[in-house]
Image (tube, rainbow, N blue to C red; front, side, top):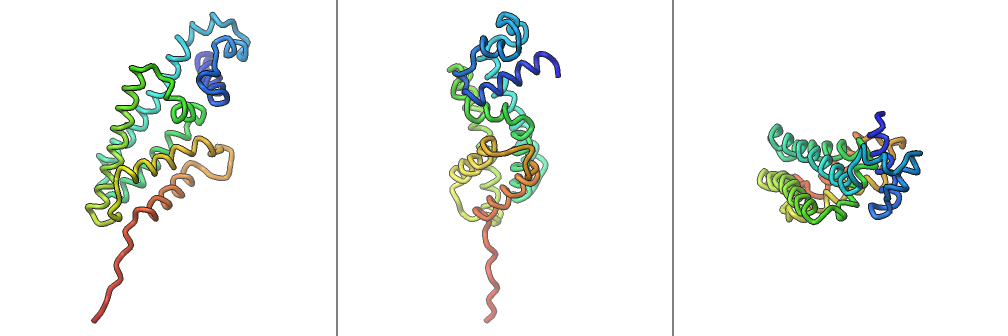
Length: 195
C-alpha cells in the first residue's frame, strides 16, 4: 500500500471512530509517526479528503445504478442487481463507506449541495425501478419515494453492522436484503377461482 493510501485509510479509521470533527491533522500525523506538515504532501486537508471519499463512492453507486437501468429489462431483475451493486460498493471499503453514509453532512456548503443533488438523482433511478415493477404488476401499489428511502436506509445501515470477517459475504447480504425487499413490495399472485 502506498504512503498516500496508508494516510487516507488511517484518516478514514479515525473519522469512523471519532467523526469528521474528531479528526485533526496533528492526531493523524501522530498515529502515523509523521510530522503534520508532511501530511500536506499527500492530502490537501481533511475537507478535501471527505469530499474525495463522498464523491468517489457516489460515482461508483451512480455507475452501478445506471448500468442496471440500462441493461436489465424487468423490474425484479433490476431491483436485485441494484441491491447487489449497492452492497458491493459499500463493502469494498467499510471505513470509507461509513464516512460516506454518516459524515457527508460536514461537506462544505457548495460540496454538500452538489452531493445532495447527486443523491437525489440516485434515489430517482431507484424509484424508476419500483415504478416499473408497479407498472408491470410485479410490485404492490406502493409509494415509490417512501419505498426507496426505506430500501436505501436498510442498504446503508450495513456500514454499521457488517463485518467482512463474519459469516456473511457481500453476496449473502445482497441476497437477504433483496428477499426482504421483495417480500415488502412483491405483489402476491392471485389465486385461480374456478366456477
